[in-house]
Amino acid sequence: MPAPFPVPQCPYQHPSHTLLYQPNAAKAEHVLYPQPAASLSMTTRPPKFVLSPTPNPLLHWESVDTVLLDMDGTLLDLHFDNYFWQHYLLVRYSQQHRLPFPQVQQELQVLFKQHQGTLNWYCLDFWQRQLQLDIMRLKQEVAHLIQLRPFVIEFLNSLKRLNKRVVLITNAHPKILEFKMQRIQLQSYFDQMISSHTLGYPKEDSRFWEKLQTVENFNRMTTLFIDDSLPILYAATNFGIRYVFGVAQPDSHKIAYAQQPNLVLLNCFCQITPFMFE
Image 1: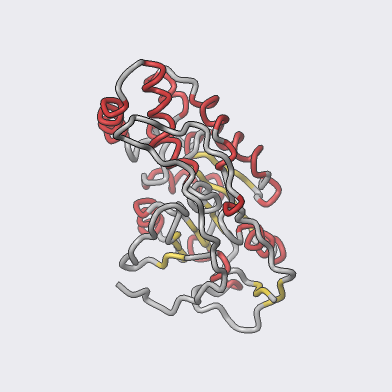
Image 2: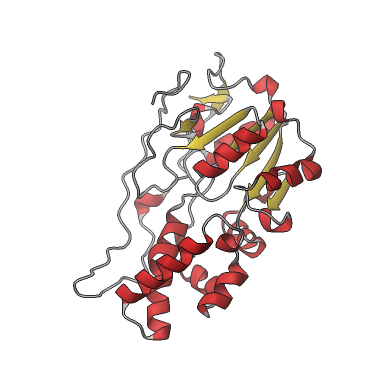
């Protein structure tokens, strides 16, 4: 379905990416340590940026006081998480427990599905107990895949210039949040960083939003929220947040979402950055 109002086109042509892994099911060969590719640089900067002379059709920045931002799939390319949970973890589990890879795929997919959308789904400690693996160490082995999405830094700098309150809200476990922040160094852009684990509910749950408002005391009518998860976006919409935007392509190695009813999916942060590039 078309968006309910015009969506500015993104002038940024994303570089083509080299697929970093290619499982060969026939030979049961799996590349465990993919190397960073030059094409994965997502921090290319225009020379400068200036205040846009025209209003943005997606939102009026003067009516926004608080910006709530997701991390994985929104600020960071979701490829790291998808690769880790859909491939790398399975390979390492297969090795440690000496099980055939197809069997591991089938068994873990069932287990993952049982907990999807719950706080356990995002809980590092839960999965380390369930799988008997040092998941943090495994994540460190492929940490080079953690990458910013295009124009994240420009967008965050724009919010600072406008003196907006910027809060990171993520379902990531606090240890994973710390691990990724050490890698990408975005801490200084946020007034506060909140893991849903500290509130007791995932962002998909309406009770998360009720608790979040007691912590942040934001005005729903002057708040912008950006996330890559459709269930979370609809939960925020149902809570009454005025500006709710999704991400069209959270994982740069997968196809973009189809347009969703009553949601605007951004191709790039430059579509809503209050400063335009020269």
